[in-house]
Image (cartoon, rainbow, N blue to C red; front, side, top):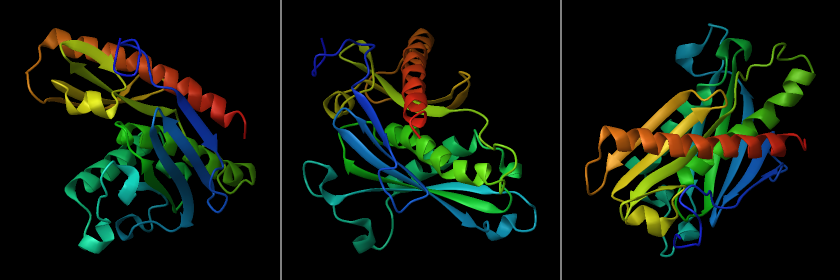
Length: 239
């Protein structure tokens, strides 16, 4: 059994509350164990300058972590004057993940901005952000589609993400902080509802891994993502 009593292939309890932030076009509070991320989707007219005049839309993301999302306080990045390399990496990952399932040509010249703010961190904040941001984005786009402002539904598939790792020689899915901080191998897997890969991030933190281990880790992560997509569907069905 794991630190929190789970089986190796068992996700932490997952909850997605839609419409959590009433001021946003779409929002979702996702809880994955003790990790909590508030995802808000805004739909704005216009696109970045390099896309103007092309008739296509854009999807982008911003990520941040509240100072006391962690055990010890982190200084706000706004007081540092610039985002950290980790923050930039994560928000680019979220943006890439969401763009992979959106047909930009059907959006018109609109931008979808996904704000993902970590309220509490206990491992897997980036994967939770992707999973929750998808739900917020779908919620935000529905009124535009229903009103005919976006004639064809632009979201081609679902997208979700989870972490996988090797801890103490054992392969585990959805690592909590204690597991992640002691992992020999750390992986983040982003996949679509159709089971296609969006991103595979795998790093040997301590011990390099074999081809066979990579395949087993992906299989474990695939099963986890499949469960997350079903949870997304259930959350969206309540809208």
